Image 1 (tube, rainbow, N blue to C red):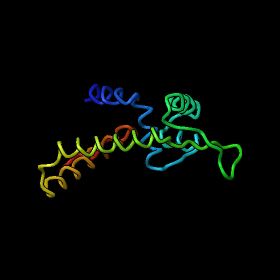
Image 2 (image 1 turned 90 degrees about the vertical axis):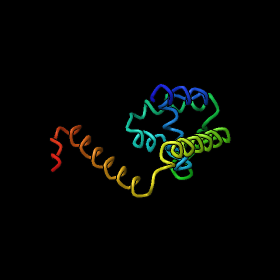
Image 3 (image 1 turned 135 degrees about the vertical axis):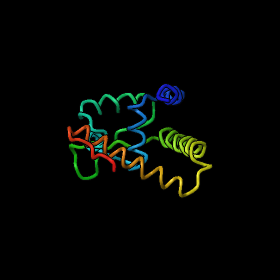
Length: 134
């Protein structure tokens, strides 16, 4: 599945990390590099490299911050906005393929189990034992 995702993103001229930046910008419209670093959980230096690559390929542009002359805002270009819209559409079609035939009850059960497993994974990542299921 990961290889398919990488292949699909490559068709857009994106890597996974660059697509993540695009998703964040698509949700927020404009962010500072610091805000992007926090959202992506990476260093500001890493964000600079990602933004440099996305700017070079025409997906984003840097603009001045209206109130903080030290900060730079990152915004999607028209190309970037169209790409995010296509990615969102692709994701919606994929979700329909995966979950389209399920009832609301089945989806509710799936979400509950997924939430429980995610919580257990988080606890394991923190070094805490996951609660045993009765």
